[in-house]
Length: 282
Figure 1 (cartoon, rainbow, N blue to C red):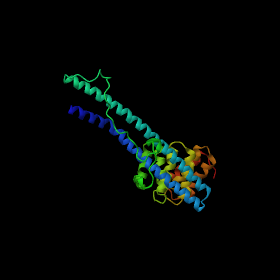
Figure 2 (cartoon, rainbow, N blue to C red):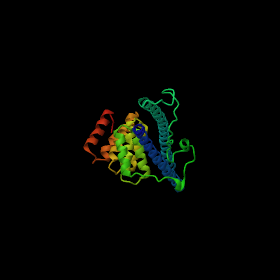
Figure 3 (tube, rainbow, N blue to C red):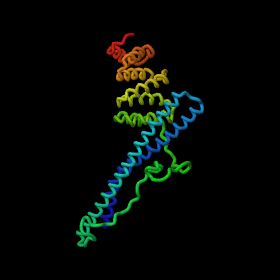
Figure 4 (tube, rainbow, N blue to C red):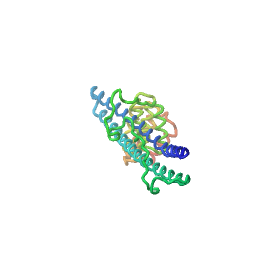
């Protein structure tokens, strides 16, 4: 029977490890999103106190909305993971019953039941609970203040690399969330400019050309003298092209070599070719 007990533990470990790791990752995502929302709320309050323009305040509201949507998706995944863990627990209990019956038969003992479907006291496991998760998951109030577990804040470099990896893997939504998170937490970091550009690329990849146009335009305006200035104006033109705004696209393509004469020759050539395709008139 010791072998049977070891078998139970082995099966439970093999079957439960992957879901547990996934739930842990989702809990970390919720913690990160919660921190981002707090940062944005504080920024909105500071902007209001400083009398910042309505446009800037609107940007904060939009970003808060995006964070809220990401948080809802993460909570939904946690709920789904808990359901899968409960189903896994039931399966393990069924396996336990079957192994007990077979071992009893092998030892010549009468199994305490009327077959595979006999009633066997189920082993109880503590229900998995996401720490500091919303009340909709844990069924109680959320801890506040000093009761909150410390948040493991990732560095700008870590978030940026994760965003790049997500974008390369075709996970545009995840990449957009990571680049937005970087700009929210580290607005003055040297990687914020690149994050702004790749956020536009994430929207462009998912064919949300309206958002990509806005994002590239903001990147061009804010980082005109940075290393992504020419790239921003080119992709702004491409976004306008996809939106059917030929006039605006032509303006971007024609102005690129004029504003950025020292840009990479290949990029300038691509802008000229796009201008020719659209039959832009200077």
